Length: 113
Image 1 (spheres, one colour):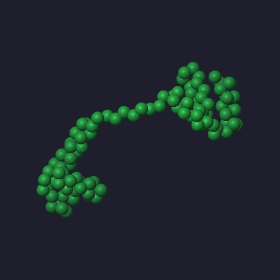
Image 2 (cartoon, rainbow, N blue to C red):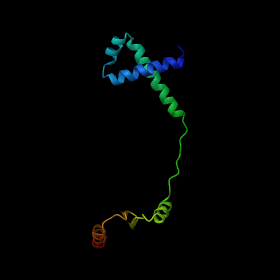
Image 3 (cartoon, one colour):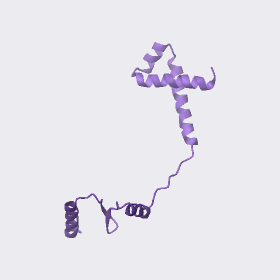
Image 4 (tube, one colour):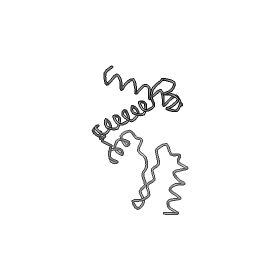
């Protein structure tokens, strides 16, 4: 059995152990595996997983800017009404917003802003 096959076998045993609900000792007794061997493979595979995750290069995704979103929504006629107050408070109302709710929001802003 080569190194990859052994790792695959132990990975499957560890997965079985985690889903079994048994203690490590009980599972090892049932399968006639030394507890020290089981804990060795748990540590080894965990360390390999951590080191493989560290080696991965980060992937960056381009997010649209606010102006790109506004342009896209305007082109699709789904633009929301945005109200920015003093740079701290931002209120957006989608086109599906009921007119009554929008009127209440505007009235409340007039009274409290």
